[in-house]
Image (cartoon, rainbow, N blue to C red; front, top):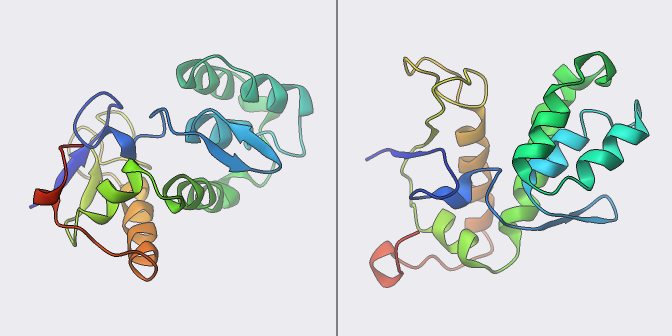
Length: 159
């Protein structure tokens, strides 16, 4: 059975980059994975935008700033964005916390970001998207299995 996720306030919302899970990377504390991801569009190319996104009050605002400045995005972003996302997901789910248990508790079930608009990170409106976010989460899940005991879903509260 496939697990679809999208919004942070819905089932499996902890898989969303907008979920309220702090990450510790690049010598800073980031409010959400979305803050980190959006800021890194400008890493090495625009320090002001990088810092502005870091300080954004919400992940929605961080995303809006990141999307509103396409001309300032670093030159290698198309090649770097998957690695940036993988880095932030590893940190987000590495520490013992509820989100880690939810991810491990999904077993071998496929994870699909059910974004109707995003055909790169999600499945898109017609399900033909690349689902890179789901694929990276499954990769992180497999890596976590090497270091974490897995508790069955029935032993935990719903996500």
